[in-house]
Image (cartoon, rainbow, N blue to C red):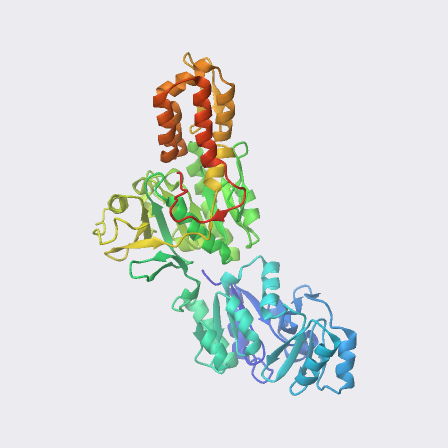
Length: 579
């Protein structure tokens, strides 16, 4: 289910002439029974609303005073969301006989033509207030307070995201909260400007339209409504057409050999998702996202995370999460994933998030030997992204849920063939532009794939370099100084520690590994940096004095991995994917 909440305006939307009809009440009750939350978002003051609407307890929360007040019917609690209006401002409007004049917890409300008196008072008194119009009504509020800010406060109380909300309204003051909702809807008699800005315009007016919306929501979750304004741009084709991914229901595999750019593509996608408020849960077996800046990180090499901890951190929708499994034995990771995935699906069924689940090294988490996986479709967890070197090593039950394959590296044909072969289906034929494309994208329902130029992340993430420079690599990827007789076992967990140990080991141990080419092999095979490995191999072949070769290797490592702590501008000519 994509939409877990329905947010409604009152006057002109659920109400006609200030009254809500029984048919509309019944429709809203059915929506509530579907386990969706109901939120009323109105410009009215609460006392005025209570006077005309006896069914306030139908709603889980009420945003009143055009975003200024949050009311919880179940507990009858009132929470002002901003400062009260200045008394001197109210007295001046009374003195000028502005009528009607409503004064709430936050709002001051009147009608045209008294907007002129309101604007003059704000100017003369030097007040920081703003005016909102609504079909002749004039509402005065503190800056930044509107229906969108009020809806955000309500969703925070419910631990829900605007990406799971359908909003419906009719007038000028509804623009803000309808544009914030994943699906903005206008009733048939809404203002033309609002209709133009919405994703769906209903066939019927006011409460009849809301009844129509409720029926469609219950019938198919508005599956036929185009909300492509939220699609995420991955890149461009040769003719500069945008290549987009839907943020809901997508099943994506990003595949290619080590060092081919998988992380570059995945990071670009992640950055766009998190920057737009989508919550991502990244299951990270190798610690590659341990310093990802847009997420909390749970777990480290010394501490294994628990499923309960992950669920607790994902309850608020604002923050994404990295579940770091570096401290967990390889054999235990599929079982952990099998336990976590259905719990994430349960969390999403309750709150509407996470919106994306990302499985790094997916062939470790969902190996081919698994006959079934605990997801019926990507929609169970919003959307699913699997990153892998070997798509054929992922469970076929997971691969059947994939609708998009992103192949990176110099041989996309081989990657796509491996994916298709795992499902015993034909691969797409090579097409012009594959050879020099950043990636090749295949929508599996189509026969052809397309060459794509990746739209890079706005900033160059330094997480891979920081990981290998100062992070903690797993035991099987660490370097071990043993010496010629295996008398040592000094573990270098990262490049910084490698240089420290190299400076301290005896000359015989240093030269033993140098002459065998161990340093370049480790950097190539475990760190995944072919360029640095090539330079270090030149030092190994040349040989020489232990002190001199230590300094040359240290200089090569430091020049490549000593980076600023903050992200730097993206350099499109340099691929920082070292996996």
